Amino acid sequence: MGLETVFGHSFLTTRLDEAVNWGRKYSFFQYPFVTACCGMEYMSVFASAYDIARFGAEYPRFSPRQADVLFVVGTVNEKLAPVLKRVYDQMCEPKWVVSFGVCATSGGFYDNYATVQGIDKIIPVDIYIPGCPPRPEAILDALIKLQEKVSKESVLDRKYK
Amino acid sequence: MNSYLLETFKAKFPDDVLDTHAFRGDETVLLKKEALLKAAAFLKDELGFDFLMDLTAADYLPREPRFELVCHFYSSKNNYRLRLKCPVAENDARVDSLTPLWAGANWFEREAYDMYGIKFEGHPDLRRILMYDGFEGHPLRKDYPLKKRQPRIPHRE
Image 1 (cartoon, rainbow over the protein chains, first blue to last red):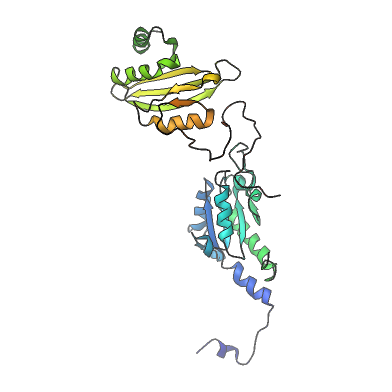
Image 2 (tube, rainbow over the protein chains, first blue to last red; image 1 turned 90 degrees about the vertical axis):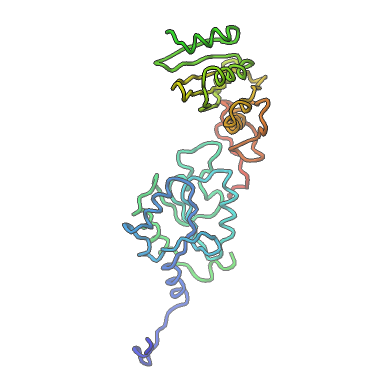
């Protein structure tokens, strides 16, 4: 007995965007680009106490080709910048970027010869999380904000960008 | 303050020791850079300093000579520590490499070269260790521009 028998001959309508975005926002596969101490908070978000799986984002993918969301967690220096760019370029559309912590966002207190002053100098960023490091609640909040952002997009938006 | 270690050192290299001081058991010898290798060999072979803990440099611009090479030695046999410092001038920023004595000096010297531009003669592979290929200058020099950036890929906007 299948689900269709429950509804009998009725049917459901929706907009394509709604259906697709509903699927996208509850199944983020993340690529954790972890370079620094923020990674500890990121791990904590995954562990049972905060449990990011509740938001449908439970799978970190360590291949950029299988990921939707790039989490840049920690300081990015000039030496690493081409690597970050390459990881981003390898991700398939649609893709989003979360700048995790103050170093990824603005360079933080590393205003020096080595550090990129914010990863938005290298790749476009969708959500910035402040904090040094941010608390796990802030990360969950950012994830919810990203879901809100995704739900407002259209399937046509990113296709040919 | 009398120190067995510093007195021994002064007696062995009377012409090369520029200054010595000790602060709460923290003993330092200021040495001519030409004598660094033989002094280090003496420490290792005669006084039992078997461990090169650290080797780095400092820039004291505008003092002349502006650089100072700083080496920390440790004797695990006697639980002694000693710091050797050598003034290095900018126009002759060359020092003998300690790699023949301690293989561990290799990466320390590459770092000092990368950050300060001090060249180590006799080093087997003296190239940058932290900064990337194409980086110009030595970023820990005091006259390296504070806001200077050398991106490897063009920045957005």
